[in-house]
Length: 212
Image 1: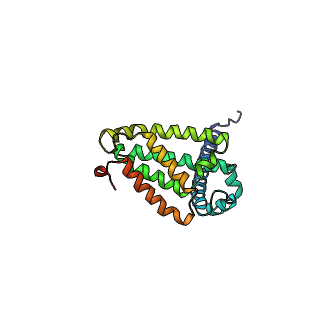
Image 2: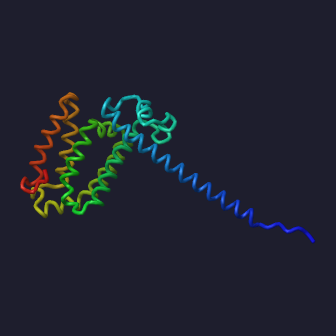
Image 3: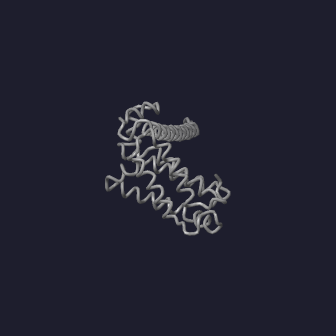
């Protein structure tokens, strides 16, 4: 009688191999995502402290990763800058999605965007200096408008905004803040941003309805 070999051990080994491979893939993706978030956070910090033209190696060092990891995620400064802006838009989308009353979140988001623009002045103009950057910024601008159009309309209908205010006024206000800061010394920016936010807040929002 011939010896019969069972296929079961091979099947089990195959399943185990697939399972281990899947777990490894998941771990690698998690590591890659974590490194990407570390680099974005470090980029925000380093650009804020030293300006947009700082050596990218400083960002890798701040994030605690190697230069190769940095360039795998962000091949150059433009890709990093764009990803930082994309991340801001994603955070706004998450904030609106989780807000019990998006119309009430409009004021908070307006000032948050003003603060992020003032943290790294010139980020948008830097990207807009190339055709690819302008195209990407226009895409993000349209995405942001799509997110805010409904809440802004609802806020105006409920008397939280002045009746003549439109989404264009928000966009114009943010552009004025960022553009104005480029000509102001770093040590004076915080004071000027606070003043600009007070003036623009009074112009856009109904004082009696403001949350702050």
